[in-house]
Amino acid sequence: MQINTDLARIQPLSLGAAHQVRIDVLRTDLIHPVISGNKWYKLRFYLDDAIAKGYTEIASFGGAYSNHIVATACACQQFNLKSFGFIRGDQTEQLSTTLQSAQSYGMQIQFVNRTDYKNKASIMDQYPKTGRYWIPEGGYGLIGAKGAATILEKVHLQDYSHIVAAIGSGTMVAGIINASLAHQKILGISSQKNNASLEAEVILLVNTENQDRFLYVPDYHFGGFAKHPSELIEFMNQFWLKENIPTDIVYTGKVFYAVTDLLEKEYFKSGDRVLVIHSGGLQGNLSLPENSLLF
Ligand SMILES: *Cc1c(COP(=O)(O)O)cnc(C)c1O
Image 1: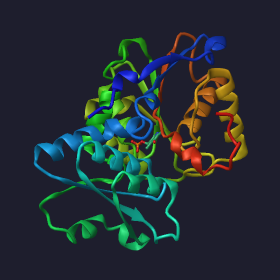
Image 2: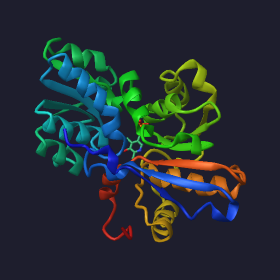
Image 3: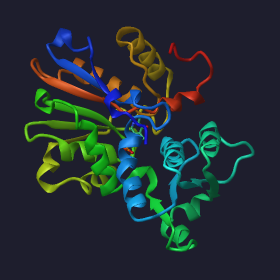
Image 4: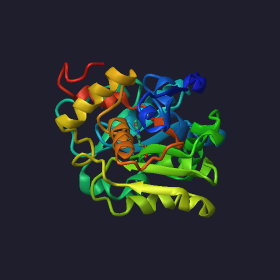
């Protein structure tokens, strides 16, 4: 499998200099154009597990714009596994670009209406138990978190006082908290609005002794999941001009906005050393009108 995680490199930001705060970005977006960023790390041990157990078919769940779905499809093609995507909602006349790519990697797409989608177990029960390996939506679960922990594998962790990452399902941030050191604070920036159970879902995947390193930050969703008011787009363009880093409207744009705002509000103190995870996901920007972004 040719995913070269060595391509994830550290890039310092100029952002914190005025506050005497060092801010580095871990560019996991650079490891692969499709199996981008955290998606590969979350999938890797599920795929290892499936192959070790002799499965030849992988199935998973997601929305019509799910990066997890297209990453799963692409990874399965590379591993010579058949892939099946169960997609939330009714079939649209034209497939989203995300689903079209998933299909181009050989994934069989099946739509499931929103009511039935809530009961994943009953969908799984419709298929024989043998032969098909199910990966939870978003890779959520202990195996996904274990993979996400390897995001930090090549980072010199002692260098940092804080780590900042986006929260979708919470799998990535859980892995990062598990891999973190006792003196560190891990800030999870939620991409969702009013999801009262999200913090607990993260905690569910975190070792007990690491749980109090976690700070759940719900204030930077910009109106809700994938919502992208012009203020966010403008920020992403300015960030590109200043730091030369592309971001996405669903996760990383909001993460870097949060970091900038927390600096201005002096949450980060002189001498702090902050690692921000660029978790990839740039495909999300394809849904924007042309020329919205400078990158
Ligand atoms: C999927 C995704 C996330 C969310 O990761 P979770 O493990 O589901 O919390 C964050 N950032 C990017 C860029 C993503 O594509």
